[in-house]
Length: 356
Image (cartoon, rainbow, N blue to C red; front, top):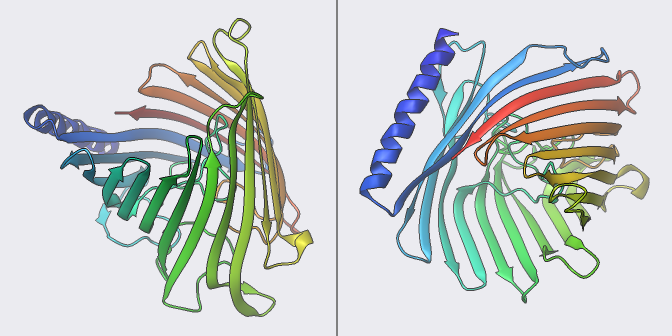
C-alpha cells in the first residue's frame, strides 16, 4: 500500500511540474492517463479469481514546432501490488512491457499537412472498430492494463472527403516483440522482422446511418510457423458499424451495432476465420454505454489480444462517464475454448481511468 501511495504522490508531483511547464510555454502540452484496475479470471462462474490489481501510468508531453510539425514522448508503466523494484527499459519484454517496468510507449515525430499525416518513431496505432469498446480483433494495443507500442512508420492520407487510406510499417525484433501476437505467429526465424498493414476506411455517417466501413490487409513475412515451416502470415479483414440515433428515447444516445470478419489467407479457410458481432446503446445522457459482444476466433487467427485463440466468447461491458476526464468500466466475459482439455474461463474487470 505504501508503495502505491508513493507512486501516486510521484504522479501528482510530475503532473504539477508539467502544468507549470505548460503555463510557461504554450507549445508544450502535457497529456496522458492513469488507470486503476482489478482483473479477475477463473473457472468459477463469478469470474473473480486471481488477485490481479494494478495501476497503469502513462504521462507524456508534446511539443509543437509549427502547425505541421510536432514531437511527442510518453513514459508508461504498470505497477502491480507485488511491486519489489522499478525497472526502466527501452525494449519490450516480449509481447508487452512487464509489470513494474517503465519505458517510452510513445516517442515520435509527426508531420501533418492538408490530407496527410505521418508518424515516425514509437507510437500507438490500433485499428479500432467504433463500438463502445473501441477495439478490434486485428490490432488493439495496450488493452486492459497492458502496454504495447509500434516502432516504425504510420501514414494516413485522405483519398476524398470521406475515405482515407492508412499504412503501418512496424519493426519487430525476435526476442522483444512489442505486441502480443499469438502462438505460431512468433517471429522466431529472423532476428529482425517487419510487418505491414494497409487499409481503407470511411468514418463518415451516410444516409443509412453507417458510421464506419473499413477493409485491410496485414502481412508478416516469414514469421508464421505453419505446417512445419515458416511462412508469410497474411490476413484480410473488414468492419462495419451501424448507429441509429434515438435522441428522445435514449436522452441523446443511439443504438449501435458493429461487426468484424477476418480471414487468415495463408492457412486453410476453416481454421483461420475470426468474427465479432456487438450490439449496444451509446452515449446515453452523455454518461452511459452498454454493450454485448459475441466473438468466434479460429486456431490460426493470431493477431487478436482481446480475444482467445480457437474460442467462442460472449462479453457484457458497461461504462459510466463521471466526467469527460474520468470514467468507470465493468466487464463480464465467458470464454469457451475449443482446445481439448482447456476449461471454460470466466473473467471480470473493474477499471477507473482518468485522462488529461
